[in-house]
Structures are given as structure tokens and as C-alpha cells.
Length: 345
Image (tube, rainbow, N blue to C red; front, side, top):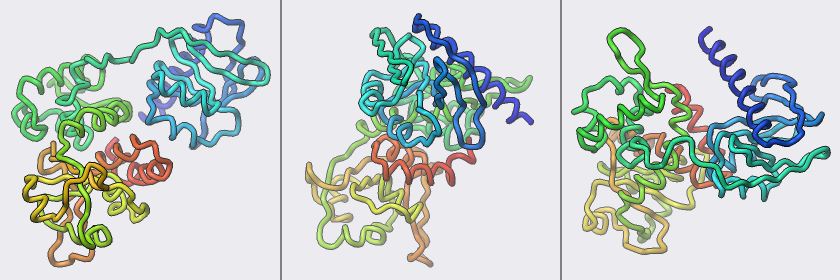
């Protein structure tokens, strides 16, 4: 019942936003609502009599565009978002995908209407300097997305599992509350994480653009037959696959072309134990972990090595695949999302 009420509320908000976006263009455009979304379909509106399927999103960034371009709709697609980054707008326009935002920017190419307005006045919903959208914030958000019940743990524990300072935890908790991602849900003022899908969307670029670069050990190449037998040659403690190989292990659906590995080994141990060699053009990018022990899907079973897996948390793999923009990765990411992530959201 609650889910149905949420859907209706979201639908009303989407309708309100859409009409506001149209009004912000300050053009003589008639827009009407035609039908609500059914199953996996999009809501339908009419613009000057032409029906369009509207894809609503708070923010659209470059890593979202390949997903949008794969959306199947019975009518021309129109992306309606509060904010669309300049690069994402360019990608949408190049692919002749209609869009409009809350700032009066639009690209619409329909039989009855052609509009292109670029006012250079848009800005992100949440400032990039926000105290929650930092590397420390991203590391704590990862823990919350993985285990939402952690929001009521002690500051000391949250600092420990996120590898950030006690002071950072308090600032980020307050920031999440101020931004509406945390709410008080009972008289004891216990927190509850809300808008988790939106928070996941915001976390994807944070992982790839803040956490990973700052935890990168280096780029390496395989030696001998290690690449051919990568699935079982690295089944040892302190080593976890991410990205494409991690996705291959979780889904048996993807053949990796680029390799991402997390390890607690030193650079010397990477050479001697893993037998990988530094190479700026190598296929393997190696990172040091940024999480607590419970955040890893470490499935190393010495009694049944043929079924063993050693991957990082599916959230990390999903975020890497989505951010890559590669259609084959995005398809695999959806499988991971449905099986491992959606049940927690």
C-alpha cells in the first residue's frame, strides 16, 4: 500500500515538474498529460499535439546517457531533468534525443516543434562542494547503500568501516540529513535512509572520480598464462576482482576485456606473489581497498575451489560498469542490479 502511495506521489511530482520545465522555456507550447506509466513503460505527454514518452530523472550525467539511449519507447523520447550536465546534453543532442531541464534549456525536435535553447545557467542540484559529495562522504555512503541499517551505528564504528575520521562521519551524517537522504523515523530519533536510488546515482561518479583515483596502486600486465587462467590463478586471500572480471564471476555473462583488481598486497608482493608487472598500457588496474571487511563478497572455499569466487561488493562492480558507458557492460550491470542491489533499495 505504501509503495502504491509513493508511486502516485512521484507521478504527481513528475507531472508538476514537467509542466514547470515547459513553462520555463517561455515559449508558446501546449503540453498535456496523456497516460501514466504501465509496467516498465514511460508516462506519455503530448507537446503541441505530438505524443512523447518522458524519461524523468533528477540529474543526467554522461554515464546515464547510454542507459537512456537504450530505453525502448513507443513514442519519441524526451528526457526531463532538473539538471543535465553540459557533456550529457551534448551526447543527447548528438543522438537526437530530446531533453529539457528546470533552467529553461531544451533540445526538442518533433514534427510540429523544433526548439534549441542553451542559456548556460544550469547548475547541479547539490553543489559538488557539498560535505557529503566528497571522497570521505562517498566511502560512508557506500557503507549505507550496502547495509542501510548501519545508519544508526556509532560514529566510531562508521569511521572504522569507512576508513574516515570521526569528525567526517558527523559532518556527513548531518549533510545527508540536510539533503533529505536521512530522516528521523520514530520518537527515539533513529535515522532511516531514504531516496536510496537517487543516492546510488550520485555515488556512481563519486566512486569512479574520487575514490578510485585516490586508491590506485598502478597499472600492470599479466605474465605467462595468468590472463588465460585469471579466474582460478588469483584465488588467494587479500585479492578481489572488480569491474569486468568481477561482473563475469557474478553473472557468467561477460567476457572481460579490461581487468580491475583490489588487493592489500604491497607493490613488492604484487610482483612476487601475484606475478604481475608494472605497465602503463597494461590490462590490469590495481587499487587498494577502501572498505571494511564485511563489504567484500569473498567467496573463497578451499574445499570446493571450482566454485570459488573472489569479488568486491556488487555495488562497486555495478558502479564501474555503468560509468564505463560501454553498452555490453551496462547490460551486465542491469543483471547485477536486479540480483544483488535492487533488493536492498
